[in-house]
Image (cartoon, rainbow, N blue to C red; front, side):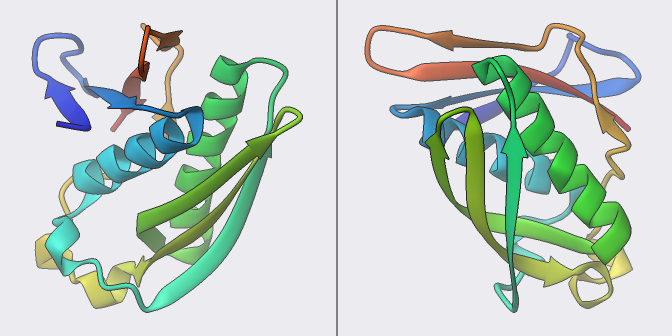
Length: 139
């Protein structure tokens, strides 16, 4: 399983772990976990495309800024993405994202409104053959 929700980590927030073979894949899995937190992803059609970018001095800062940018786009452009093609180089992540407008997903298919990414328990680890992240989001 590329990501899983952690039930007993945060009471007023939602926590998840994501894992992938590459750092780029890890960013994409974290984006997918956020989408699953916010909506029924089966109802997120790939009608809208947007490129987003983030910068950071460390992998943790880069992932934090990337996920924060997804929250910003949701709040400002009313978009939730479920498909991510991420490229990372020189402290910058650029992602081609595909998803749909909140109104087209439909209120009945929305779950939680992520307000922010928290630093509580936030981490990235590189294991022998995979990257792993723990993320807690404020809802």
